[in-house]
Length: 89
Image 1 (cartoon, rainbow, N blue to C red):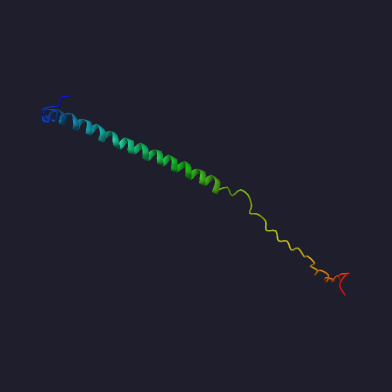
Image 2: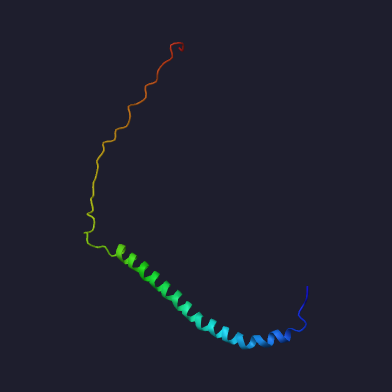
């Protein structure tokens, strides 16, 4: 296994390329952020439309209140008649 003798030679060639790659990456990043923001905005608009569609359906009249009173005649049970045991006096 051989190790490079001097890393300065390899790093000297990269600074000329690195700023160009960094500039391309920086130029590409706002586009992706804009794309994500646009996708989130579309999702928010669709979600808002669904909520508006289901919450805004007022084409039916309000339900009629029905009040019923049921009268029940409650009678207490007849008194319990004590049975006498035949063996008991």
